[in-house]
Amino acid sequence: MKKFLAGVSILFLASCGRYLSPIAPQELAPEKVKQLTATADASGVSFAWSSSTRDVRGKKLKSLEGYRIYRKEIDPAENEILSFDGWDQVAFIEDKHLAELLRRQEEARASGGIVRKVSAPDELKHFSFTDKDIKNGTIYAYRIIAVNQGGVESEDEQMVQVTYLGNDSIVDRFTLDD
Image 1 (tube, rainbow, N blue to C red):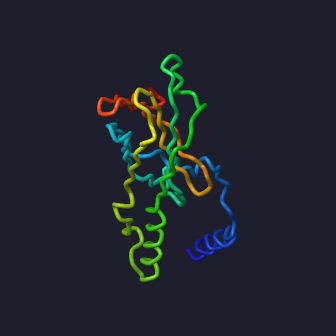
Image 2 (cartoon, rainbow, N blue to C red):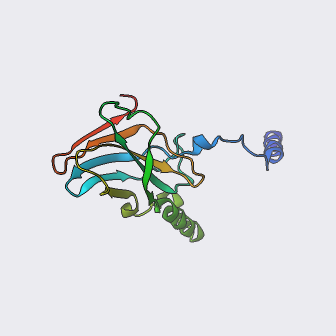
Image 3 (cartoon, rainbow, N blue to C red):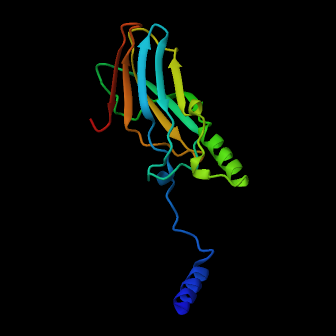
């Protein structure tokens, strides 16, 4: 048994200080936004969603800057919604939940608390945005993309198309897999 433990100790010490294989930046991208809802009325087009908490590998996020809201006008004759051309960033919504979570975890660690039981306040995990700079009778497409501090964007699987007619607007949500 002593020889076994000595062998394990030598292997452990021999590997100490070695780095893991590099990870591509795309693998550290945040997961797509969660629980995305969209509505439209006379005041504009409104969105609500919940924070990303994991990267695309399913691991807990280490970095999250916020959310980019992209919009483009759709020509009904061309139906170019799936084209990645013509998108403009209309807003950036900062995500503070991860920074607050990490701060609280450090406090728990320093005081000898249980780090895994710490969470960020719920109000920091929910976001909203209303686009008021729109024209009646126009068709718009929207994408809301999570972005980490390295500028790497989440997967682009969800889009919302809005035929803006004030209170009579038509809102369609779909994924690129449809």
